[in-house]
Image (cartoon, rainbow, N blue to C red; front, side, top):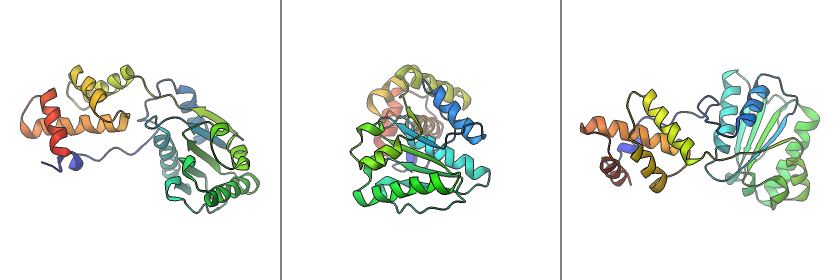
Length: 225
């Protein structure tokens, strides 16, 4: 039982189609235009708090380029990556730029210049704050502000409830509203985690031949902790 939540269906791969935009429709349209070659700007910076969908969008863009057989690179700045440049790359994603140490900041600065001068690569970068508020090298901050800058607005609780309800209906079951309310009060509040828990709860309900209720959800969360 302890492994049940972890062994349930894997979380679906991030894509633009399974991203619920809420107030971020303009951003979503821009990213789709970039994929379709309808946007001339190649530098895009996304910012917002934890759980707002920054990583989802960067990974989704990388995935879409992969599906078109284009070369890409995804860098997680928590690992202090070595930013290598290849003019054949169609898209480079740099996630959580706030975490870069001084040495990695210099490497990213150089990457910006190489992409600008030597390729047609799309560069997507994410951070927790707008460029001007980042505590990074000033020359790198300038680069981060070169292109389009979008704040990602987190979904409201009502939008998250609707997303969970719609997901459950698409999976063939009805989700009692008290389940959504409980998860928003006691669970991880980002949408991918909420949806993953809903999927696990559905399977747990079927495996135990019990209706989906708050007590069943509590039991699932307890045995999975």
